[in-house]
Amino acid sequence: MVGNMMTINQPATGNRQQEDGERQHIAIRCIAIVAFLFTPLACAMDALQDPTRPPAVLSMPQGSAEILAPSGPQLQSVRISAHQRSAIISGQRVKVGDRFGDTRVVMISENEVVLKGSSGIQTLKLFPDVGKRIIMRRQHPEH
Image (cartoon, rainbow, N blue to C red; front, side, top):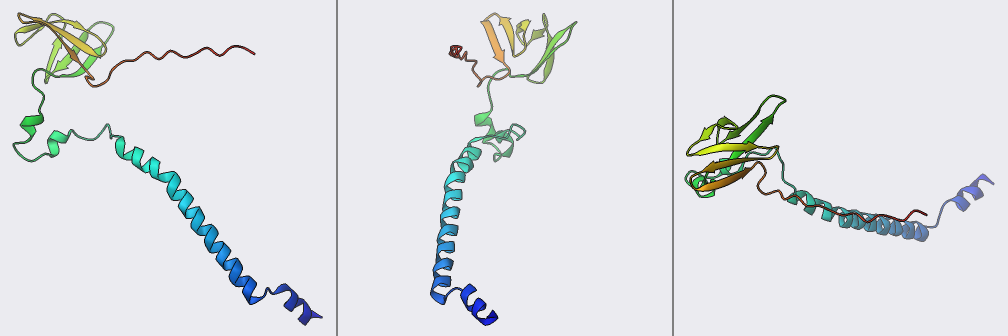
């Protein structure tokens, strides 16, 4: 009787090969699905920039950095305390009323400094490539 049970529980060779083929087919489908799902994520990660990465100018060959170097004064940081506002412009610390080159600092805010000189008013932005947008959200009616 034990011998009969062993033969009943053992699948036929054809069934075993069929089951192995089905498992391989399922495994291949799972791998394809995972690859399909993670491909957009990998592409999006390439588009993101590391904010702690040094400027590209530092890794460029000698002489080519001058082409990309920004012209004019650059606002590098702003410091606002209860008693004083100051900023670093092209490596020089300035306060409201100080002279910077042939201009005078007339205003320091959280993200910009305004300079006034003989050629007019110049606004230096801490993040020049970032634009502020107002997004209006629709109100959902209460149920």
